[in-house]
Length: 127
Image 1 (cartoon, rainbow, N blue to C red):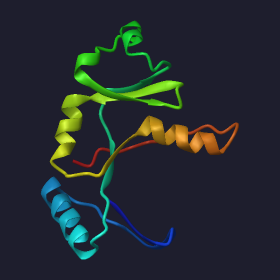
Image 2: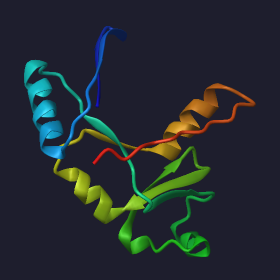
Image 3: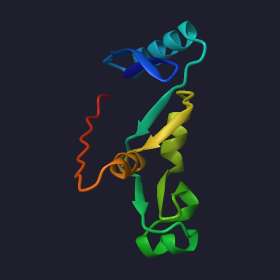
Image 4: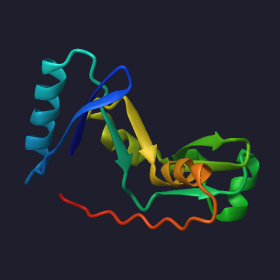
């Protein structure tokens, strides 16, 4: 877990924590949010039941093999849609997160800031 503390858009403190189980993670999240009243919790969704497609038109999702009744999606810059399984999103709901990020939206955010850059993001499942 990465814990960052900002004041006036300036990073004051950064801490990283590793946990052996989800219970310890949840307890640490609760502890940190009690210590600092204005705390926002976010996570990157890590599931194979997510993706990105080059359209925002729901009716075109089937062309890419995506069944829209079991997903939530958002359109990014009217260019592409990032989607994830409703079931996987519901699993994250128990963490009381303020934000859930797709790795694809983070790659797009980073890529928009630079040209001719190749991004490889490697994640490791801890639990």
